[in-house]
Length: 322
Image (cartoon, rainbow, N blue to C red; front, side, top):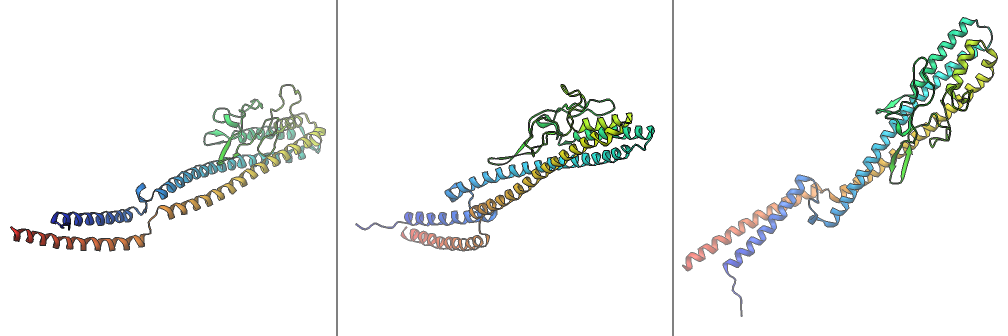
């Protein structure tokens, strides 16, 4: 039995081919308008899955980069504050050497003591430095607790909180960005045990804790009393020891900054690599796509003309048979 090709069959075949070419043309047109080779999962299921994975990784890398930027700004604020403290300590040492030689009168010694008092207040103001609304030397409670009271007659006791402040810069990597300026145990940031301390009124230590604020208060007191022996001896030695601790703390902050710089470079490289792979996976080759569009458009127009001719012939045959 020989099947007869009817006009209906011809029309259905013709429409099917037209729809096929139109869909291909529309898909290529969408690629041109979006710049993407994959616009829906059916375009490339594997490529779509890979694109989703890469976008997730890029989102994580962006968050890590933001944390690195925040940590860097935090450590820079710490560096500025510690540098200012360094200048203060150097000035106090100059005054200490000048007043320890025994050639100054009571007025000179009193004037030097007043300047040291002012410099002590400056140190405590530096310790109260804030970044983004948080006291950088007050641990994880930095948004609420000011480390030190300032002003005439204020206490030298540490008022801040405890708990280190970290920034996550990788899937299993975090960096401590704060600096401990008062704790009696070693800090994770560079192993600095203490710096400012609690002045001359530390509980259980009538003579003070021997840390920077304690040393500065002793210097001011000995200047007022004219105790040049201690000024040139115990006071100078204590100040130099605390100055060394301050330098060690600055070095620790510098190490943190260097680690953050390395992390920033590594994250940028990873972002660049993932972005390139993502582009290779989902982006359209515009030159090739434009050529495909032109070819498909020409094929579709030719198919329309051919279909129109077939429809006309079928209509003439139908009328003729009628």
